[in-house]
Image (cartoon, rainbow, N blue to C red; front, side):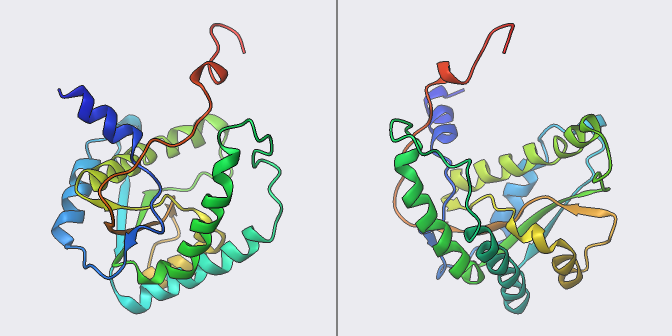
Length: 213
């Protein structure tokens, strides 16, 4: 295994927003190949209750994007105390750029050639922590593998969840059954430019502990 290529893929798979090429079509067979690779991800109890809704119809893409934009406007108007304020925090210097790109995506998501919504059979709103962790742990690894597969083929996306504020409305547009949970929303497009850089993150020593918190 070429560790250098693997490490580069893992450290440069970014949330792509402003660099998505909305004018270049995305071939269905490419997305299907990426999803085929994603299905190799681990899943709880080997149930594989995943479903992936690929939205290519322009009107439906607009309707889903309208829900996302409406949710984003609510989110953007609410102060987020979790955002790092300390300027010595390497993440703080990135916030303005992140906010700008998030606004851009909210305004332009409808232009994405495809939208992909990973779903999983069942609902866990009233379940305990263990059941919820197992449930989402059965779909999110596949969703991340999908992002990696896209990246390796010159496509990008951004992991978004804001449309879930209007999950029922999205389900009605796409005919998703009531017993199926939408987990995130991916705008999918080829990316512009040659490469990405690793993000600014806290040193690993600040986020690990041995044997005790």
